[in-house]
Structure formats: structure tokens, C-alpha cells
Length: 532
Image (cartoon, rainbow, N blue to C red; front, side, top):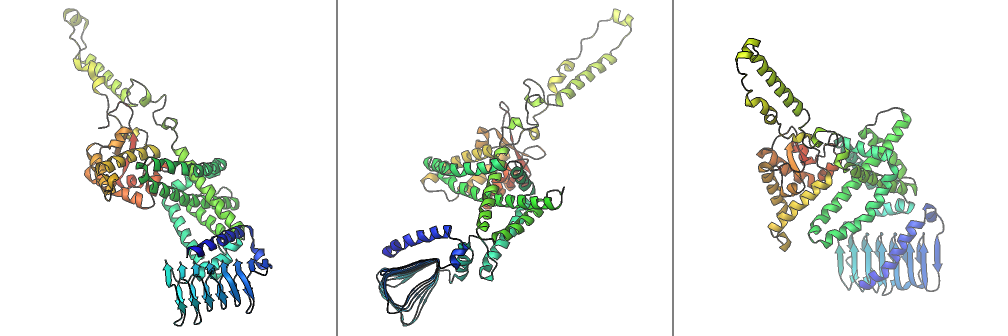
């Protein structure tokens, strides 16, 4: 079996190379053939060894192989079907992305990868019969000396073979034929999923579409940078050992960003077309995604251009999402209303906006009332000692100092919240001895720990380190119901490929899905203000 796979690997590489450089016209032409005395190799059309003739190897790449004569070594079909009615030597009979029909003598192994094996009544195989991602049908009179084996049998794969011949070899994802109906159904299912995403996350899709519209160059650059940094980040996570637990979440985040990016790219494409047809038409994400998807499906059927459009949509969309994330995590001081210079929250020694004027007005009103109440005639003033002002008049401004309005504080961004979550995850993992192999319930313990800490302290240990506090949307601490709902909502944010956490970077209020469910926000508390 190892020898067979070793012989197979060069042909697989050759098939990949040919699939990249050959176009649809290559399959309609005569292709390339080498009919030497010892080998028959064809690229782009079929290979045939007639009865009574001899050859060492009979190989076809992107074509069928049929052996009625004597092949002293091997018979191979890559992206095509293999038929053996004659004799094949110890090299065996191999079919990749095609079916193998054996009704002759094979001195080696018979292997079908992503295809089925059929043994006829006159089949004699000295080696082993193996099918990978396919099926095996065997006549009762067929002889197999080495036995049979199956790897992940999926039945017959005619639909996949049709897609290879009608789509892959033409450089397009779809083809106008019923032979690839399954690909069309898959595309329509993805279209419905994309429309659902556009409807549920309308604001986020619109924001990323605007980013792609106004910053196409930086979006592509963001894709390049992320692709270059992915190996570095993975290596850093593996080296830290503890970061290994984050690797699956990291991949899930990239996959979600890719899916969301494709929705954004389709919406941008559809929006451009709709605005060209109707000048001044307002952008509507769901309608834009629908129009873009219909146009993309039409382009997918064009040879070569189909795959090019598919790749470009993914690159532009992913880059737009990444660049939108970068814009969302800008320094908080650069955003309006976050306590920058000139605001009441940012002045040292000053009171909160609106509170100090109210306190001053209260003090002034108290002094005026006191003066009016104690007004006297000049005679009385000459003969009487003016009483001292009450002590509460001078102390009124200090007593009226308002409490901290947490809802007016800047919202915590994506990266700072992920850092706090990572700190909590590490602490829970260490506490449970997870690094020693006992981590089956780490997520449950993390959720319970979060609910308890949110209820009693309004934050966690990671939140204390990062100056974060969880509050209700309208202000005020969390009760038990809100804390538990928020903890359970974290599982929903995680199970949908982590998209609920990624949504922090896209949402205007930087709310995750579990924040929206529980009605909470996470704010950054200034230095010097107690979190607990």
C-alpha cells in the first residue's frame, strides 16, 4: 500500500499543476500524449492500451485510462475513470477523483481515492483493494488475495466527479448543467445563510461595506498583513503552552471573519450595481447582498473568471472586516464623548458635567434664601449682632458631589475584553488543574465564576486588571437573573463559531451577543476609581 501511494504522489502533483495551467479548450483539443515503447501518458484526454499490446505504464491526467492489453507496471487515472480488462503489473491500478473497474488481472494493489471500486466476475487482484471516500462493489467470483479496506465510505460520488470535469477543469465554481445540481443547492443554501447574516447584523454589515467602499486599498493590505501574521501568532500561542487552548478559538475567529467578509463583499458588489441602476438609492444590506449574490452566481459560471471572482470577493471582504476591526479598536480618547480634552470627565479636579453647575446653583440658592430670611432694618443691624451663617451653606457643594455615571464612560473594545477573558481563563484552568489533564468542565466553571463575580463585584479578576466593569444598559449593578442570563449567553456567543464575541469589535456599543441578550454593557473605568 505504501509503495502504491508513493507511486501515486507524482501523478497527483502533476494533476494539480495541469489543472492550474490548462483551460477549457485543452479538454476539447487532442491534448498531449507520449506513446513510447514503454509508456503511454496522456494529459487532457484518454489513454488506451489495446488488447495484444504491451506498455510499462498507462497514465491519463484529466482523462480516462483503459487497459485491454498488458501493462507491466502500473495503470493510473487522475481526474478520470480507470478500466482494466487486461493485465497490470506490481505497480497496481490507481484512480484519483474517478472510479476503478477491474475485470482483469492486477498483480499489485487497487486504490480509488474519492471514487468507487467495482470488481467484475473475472477480476483477480494479488494485492489489497482500498477505496477512500467512495464505495466498493464486488462480484461473487472476484478474487482478492490481500483483502479489502475502506476509508470513510460515502457511497458513489458521481456528483463530485461531474464537478471536477464540468467546473474545476474549466476554472469555475459552478456550471450550467444538472450534473452539478448539488453544487447549486449548496450555493442557494449559502445564499440564504448570507441573507440571514445581513438581516440580523445589518449595522455591522453596513459598516464593513462602507469601509470597503471608502478604503479598498487598506482592506487588501489588511488581508495580506493578517495572512502573514497568522503563522507568527500560532507559533507564539504554541510556545506559551497556555495559549494552545486559544488556537481553536483563533481559527474559529478567522473562519467567521471570512464568512462575514464574503457577505460584506457580496453586499458591496450588489450595492454598487443597484446604485448604478438607481442613482441616489439608499443602501440596504439585505437587498444589496441578494443582488450581489445573484450577480456572483452568474459570474461563477464563466470559465476562469468564475474562480477569479470567487477569490477576489473573499480577499476584499476579509480585508474589509479586518480593517473595520482595526478602525474599531482605535484609542478611546480619539472617539467623541469618551472623556477627551475639554470634557468634564477629563479635567483634573473638576466635577462631572452637569453636576457641578447644579451643585453651584444649589449653593447659591441656599445662600440667597438665607440672606432673604435674615434681612433686617439698619436700626436692627446697628443694635444686633449678625448671626453666623449656618455651617451647611458652605459645605453644600462638597455634599452634592454626584456619583460616577458608568453609562457615560467609554465602552470597552474587543482586544481589551479578550485580554481580560484570557486572564480569567488561565486562572480557572490553573485552579482546576486543567494543565494536568483535567479540563473537561473549564467552560462551565468559567461561566459560574463570571456570574458570581458580576453579581457581587461587577467585574472579574481579569476585568480588575484591565479596568473593566459590567453594568446594565440603563446603569446600575447586575442582579442574579441578569448575571446568570449573561453567563449562559456566553455559550451562544461561542457556539456559533465565536461570532458573538467577534461582534464586540463591530457593534457601535461594543456589545457581544450575550451583552445584548442580558441588556449589559462593559465600560472602562478611569484610573483611581474603585471597581469593587
